[in-house]
Amino acid sequence: MAEKKFLVDLNLSGNLLNNARIMNGTSFPTPLPAQATGYMFFKSDENKLYVYDGTNWVTSAVADTDLDNTPSADDVLVTSSTGTDTTIAGATILAAGVMSKDDKIKLNALDENAQATTDLLISNNQAAGAGGDGDTPTTVSLTDGGTLNQVHIIDIAANNMAGLFTGKEKLKLNGIADGANYIDPLTLVYDTLALNGGALVANIDWIKDDTQLAGDSDLEVSTTKAVKAYVDASIAGNSAYQGSYDAAANSPDLDTTLPVAGLVKGNYYVVTVAGTFFTTDVVIGDTLIVGNDNAGTGPNVEADWDIVQRVADDATITKRGVVYLSNEANTINGVDAHNNSVVIPSRLKATLEAEFMGGVASTIGNARRVSFPLAIGDSWTVAHGLGHTAYQVQIFEDSTGDEVICGIKKASNGTDVQIDTNQTTAGTMTCVVIG
Image 1 (cartoon, rainbow, N blue to C red):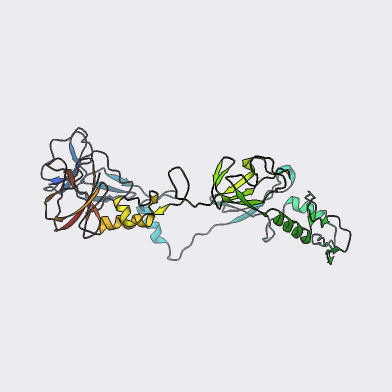
Image 2 (cartoon, rainbow, N blue to C red):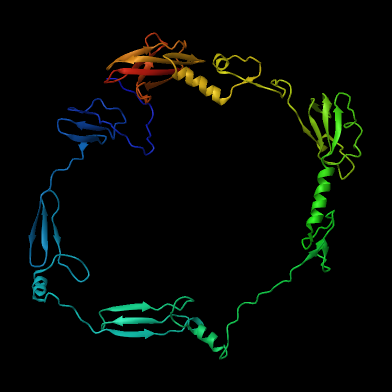
């Protein structure tokens, strides 16, 4: 029968092995490989599972066992037909066991509603804690004269539960005068500050109306009017358009006579003639923004400028620019219509699905997909046309779409794929060869 040989261990990572059969027959397999310890074999004539222990085939099947017992006055002897006999001793006050003859007689003599009685004594133990502060809780003992002794600890009182009164709490209470009243924690109320037409009602020196925000203190705050005036001035001053820039003629002069006086952070130019700005190639539409005015002296080096580049030309391997999206036909045929085409994921997915799922036989690059009929217990030769044997093969059942593991080997012509199965029903399979 066809089989698939694994040359490495098969690790199921804790998953189930469903619908599997153990190697079986009426005779143990021979010869055994060198690493045969742990082999399993089911002898169908005995209906027993055997395991090879490295020397012999052994079975885990266990014969039936019959149990019997022989009671005496104080215990019961349990006998086994296949194992070791044992004796179940009589019960005691400390251990379970069988009821003895004498205990049964005593139990029969008791009334149905009889109850045991005992004299109970309740006592307490008041103990001082470390240093004599009386923190140790009192214990209450319940005894019946020596044979039963139960101890219960009464907890110290809490804010929401009654309990013991400790020595420390008693000492604290003694220090409070008779008739004393509880007072809520002190609450401080601050006066509300009022503004009148932007002017302060009172001379509060930590509120500032400086529109330059020149102060640098964690103990001062600025009015909203001052903050708004500062922000408006900053935005207006730092985003002023300065005009166009001819990068071919360096006009106006921005990268030779340095620093460029009069320019402040946020000023910008738009390139109208392509050329070089310092060491950077710029094209029409690029924007040159002053990023550092060196404390008012003006930009001095290329790093003081932020260059926002506008892409307009076609991209090349070494130059930024526009790229074109490849369509499905060009993607499958490897055609770069613009010499800078790119493949987007959605079109690549559509191309692969159309090739591998849409027809009876397809090819793409070094991959082949072939659908072939499936007869019972048959084998097939799949002609992939790759011209070599360095390929990867996957088999799918067409009726379910599931991948199946078949016997795969090189065909007799030396290049094609031969597929063997133990299939018991007719149908079709799809073979994908990649290489």
